[in-house]
Image (cartoon, rainbow, N blue to C red; front, side, top):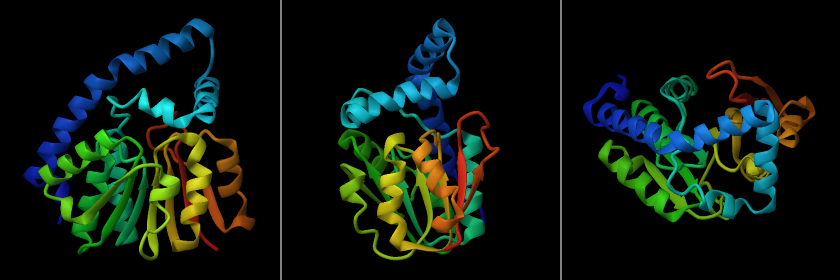
Length: 231
């Protein structure tokens, strides 16, 4: 069974990927132009953006309230495949945005026989749109999208967590992971999209912290990190 092929899911994802490309085109072009003008690398540009985040991540993401900043179809399919392989029944997502990645993960939960995805989105309007998109895909019953700061909304995830997707404010990856850490099931998978924060990478790449981690060669160049809970 592959719910990604069902009409409600496939049609909703097709629409959202088109909408995301249109909504984010100007933002991505501005970043590329800035890099070209200054001669900076992606890592240097990420460091600059993360510095802005650290000053006030709420303001940073308020300014991006109309942007999707969504995963690609390739990465979305990988999320689905990983959740299926892990036989996940409880997933935590930091940075739900409009719900694109959420749909891929919720489809996997459906095909695994059910479960719960707990998502957190800072912007209430985005959280509302994500819920509507999940309903359109026929997956709303599997997902709890919580609006607000993840450091508060993810304090209670309701049980052992099989998979975590970190795709929100980059500077919060480590604090959010530490918040969820006590609930990670043995062998839990953690995906850090755009994992440019060195403190986060140092934590998950240190075996003493109970992880095995390495860069993920899916959508290469975006700083994706794949981590497994071994401790």
